[in-house]
Length: 554
Image (cartoon, rainbow, N blue to C red; front, side, top):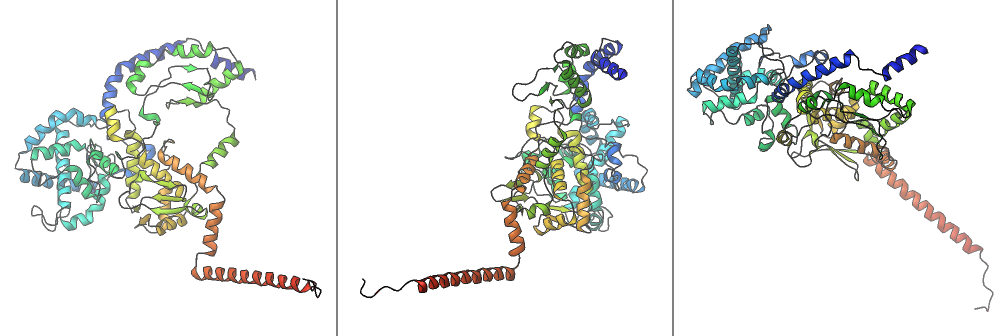
C-alpha cells in the first residue's frame, strides 16, 4: 500500500529533472527540422504499407505482374522481370509515334526530379539517372497500355502480342488493373501528363484522366473539377467512386492521429460551464506544432500548482496518463460507467440487413445518375435505405484495401485551404466499407442485397462476399464524424420503433403470397358476414320479446 502511494506521489509531484531538460532540447531540434519536413510531407503521396497491414493480406499489396515505380523495381519475381521487356517495347512504340528523341523526355522530367522523389514516403535508393530512366519507361508503358485498351486494332503491335493486343489485354487486363491500383505500385500522374505534353499528340494520347477512367470502365469523365490535381492512378480511381466537389458531400470533421503532429499547449483544470468537459488544445499542422510547443516544465507546473480537490486532481492526472494521445481535441473525465457506454453503443449500432428488413426498413438501389459510395441516404418517413450498386469480384478486396490505405496515409493530411476545397478530404471509402461491414454479417444479408440489385458479384457464393466485407475493416480505424455515421444512427433509431416492425411482420407473414392474401381477405369477409348475421339475429330476438301494444291505443 505504501509503495502504491509512493508511486502516485512520484507521478504527481514532478520535479525539473534531467529528462525534462532533455525533452526541451529535443523540442528545439524538432522546431528546426519542422519546415523542411512539413514541405516534404505536403508533397508526399505514394506510401509504404506497414508490415502490420501486410501480414493481414500480403498479396493485396504486392504486384503480381508488373512493377510500377521504385518500391518493387528490382524484385526478383519472374513475372515482374518478364514485364520489363514489354515495357521497353512500349517505349520504342511511344517514341516512334511521337517522333521525338528520348533525351527530350528526360530533359522535360529533370526539373521535376526532386519533387518526383519527394512524392515517395521512402526515398528511392537509385541514382538520379536511373530514377529518371525508370520514370520514362514506366510512364510510356502506362500510356501505351491506356491507348491500346481503347482501340481494337493497332498496327504498332502484332495481333498475337502477349500484352498490347486485344487478346493479350483480355488475359493480362484483370491482373494489370489490380497491380495498377496498388498503393506501393504508383508513379506521380504529372509524369504521364508531362510525357503527353512533350509528345504533342493529343489525338493519339488524349487526356490522361479520361484514359484512366476508360481503362477501368468508369463513367465519370464529365466532372473535370473532381479530378483536378489528381496524384496518381489510384487517386483517380478513388475520386471516381465518390461525389467529391458535388453538393451534399460532407467533409469529415476530425483527423486521424498520424496525419498531424499535435502538442499539448496546456492542461487546463477548469471545467467548461456548458458541458463539464476538460479542454485540451492542439496544433493543427506540424509547422504550428513545432513553434507552439511549450516547455515541458510549464505543463508540469500547471498540474502541480492546482491544489484544489486533491482527489479529483489525482484522478484527472491518471486519466491523462492513460488516455492522452496525439489526437488532440477534448478529454472527458473518467466518469462514464460501463453500463452507460454499452447503452450508448447499442443505441447507435446498426443491425445487419436481414434484421433491418424484418424491422420494416426497405432497401433501394440508387439510379445510374447517383452511384457514389458517399451518397448513401436513409428516408426516415418511408423507412427506405438507398445504396449504390457494387460489383464484387476477385480484385475487390485488393482494390479496397489499397484505397483505404491511401486514405489512411494521405487524404487527411494537413493541406492548404485550396487543396482542402479541391480535394474534399475524408475517409469516404473507408466509411463505406465500415458501413457495409455492419450491414453484411452472413450470407443471408448478401442474398437480400442481391435481391434488390445492390450487390452483384462474380465470386463463388454469398458467403464469400460476406467474408470479403467482414475482413476488409480488420485493424482499420474510422472517423466517427463521417456522414455515414449519421445515416447509421438514423437507421438504428428507426429499427427500435415498434410499429414499422409489426407492419413488416404482417407483410412478410400474411401478404407475401397472392393466395395467402386472398385467403385472408376471404376470411375477413366471412367473419364480417358472421358478425352482421349475429347482430341481426340479436335485434330480431329483442323485437319478438317486446310486448304487443293494447287495442285502441294510439
